[in-house]
Length: 440
Image: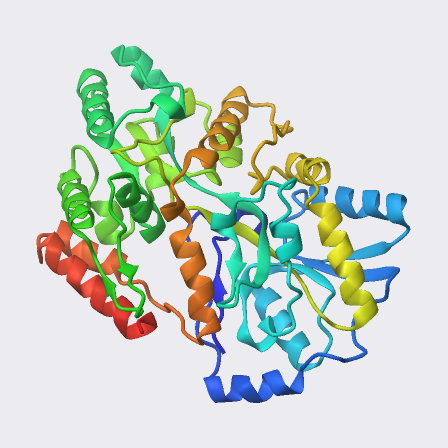
């Protein structure tokens, strides 16, 4: 069986790095198990009582608790919330499918073919114009059925050491509508480094996701499949990746992050690095951990594209266990994604909304954290559709029984940064790896 994971959020214990759930079994076994857990069973809840599985760290389940309590008060329907440890969550879902005992609703970290045939079609909710759900981030099958709607989204972003920028007298853009290019940003960061004698201009997560975001912003598509499923890279991607490899000169960027796994977040938090390319999940941690300097989220570069690599923080699904429960599950999810109810969920749990037009008020005491979330919420509606490509591609792979079990990006680009091969050769090896694992 193939599972494909979404980015683990901090409520799932994520350390800021995408994890992909590995291949669990062969496709033939999956077909047998799927037949064993087909629709029409008597499992699941009732029209007045549903079970809702989540996986989150204590304290960050506040939004879900608030939502189910409000729903019970308004409708009389009891939605029992079950918080399951992340490390065993996908296995528990997998086993529940085999035992015909799936929950009625769940916020899942991955889709699994063993239960994907039991998912309720959420198209009515996703296509409701009042909800303003960003269609780029939905999980759909080939027929257009909406399999899941993100509970929230995550996006790459740029952090700066505000203290160093101010010390150097270098200005930064304040609006995503009027942002800088990567060329302008690197020039500014290098200037700050030189003036303040900081060690590096930029640290950059050793992450294919963060690289994709930068490539998208430089007009490339990174490793992209055509209609036949064959992967390749375009010229803009080659130019962007060559530029990235060139930055790793132990001045602009440290080679050690992409060649030997040094911690870029720790480097930034030391106060001796000008900027850090990571993502929104760092905000709550930085609000508490950074004390020795002022930090800020700043608009991401566009050269010329305003983009990111946007992923689902969680994938909200409903299961068709029986007629009464599935109808009740869909009603609950319809209620959940009504803008007022969904905004309340986002505020209480600190989510970036998948719906546009909202203005969540978050409980952070840190002004920098408040400003960061405001910036992300202003930026997401501006992102080009390419920003959701990889998130959607993963859904398509899992529905075909395929999985990118090992993204070759980090290894191959590490070799290029070390001078063991050219950036173009690294890209060719990455393309070959994608074609071998998920091509066709």
